[in-house]
Length: 424
Image (cartoon, rainbow, N blue to C red; front, side):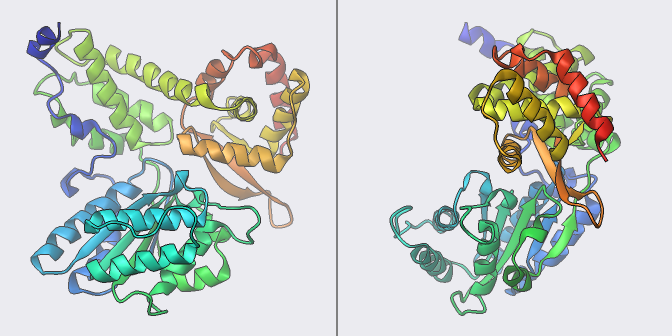
């Protein structure tokens, strides 16, 4: 059977182009000319053996922040090799790092791997200062210039007993290391976040030493997503993609906040479905089937492993988003619906801060993004949660949990409508 499949003509020629995390050549990056130019202009000073400025790249998921950073750094690295400059790009995703000490060790480990050496301090059981000293030692001995890329930096909150979040202390230490003579090499920090207001949570000391150049990334629109997919169409063999496939895939992705990763993933799944079904072309039906499969699979994968409390928080928030035109939900409104659910199901009820924290944790699964917003100058702040998938899909999937299904969906809708009417 394996040999039969091996001999079968496929549709996909280059699967790497259908990997959203694959770093493509600059000529395949579309819809981000201004951002590409800005990042290139600011990081290129490393070519002259100088320190590039610090950068803050912000905007929704899947809008090209990490892709452009990697592409520019890859180009700089290639040119530095020809000029005998030892340049390193050290990238760390902060979503799974829970303390400052763990984050510093991960930076140290990635830097050591890049240099081809071993880390001389353990991950646990030593002071964070020893990890910093080891990072400085490796950088000084092996690099002339390093760019530290801190992706999803806002997720590195750290312990609650600290006065400022861990990401603020990390930025302060990195940006001060050169001035304190800890580092002889030039270093630059590229902070990447989906939270447009992350810098408001950075302490004053860190802000004054970090002083980044800001680069904003907007959602892609349907036309830009089409252009992105057409630049990757050679992932498939010639003449196997129907004319209406790319516009439809782009339209689906544009509905979920213009996420290019989702558009690329949709094309991959559509191609795999066509191959699996033995078809010689990718058609509109494959894209529609892929859209349903991708949505349900992603949601199922997430909700299968989360706690009942997280499910209740997610269900309440999705129920609100499903009743709004923007498919978004204020944390204040979502919490009131969460209160109704916990009372109805006789479940433990947590304070609003805990509800918000559990929803913020859901951003690590790419189901939701959030932004801080205000009712006005004299009113308090709230978070606005935006869903990366259709809220209805999330609700349907969560209702497969026997406990959550005990809450009447019609009654939940009534509660949501009442809360939205009271929303100011």
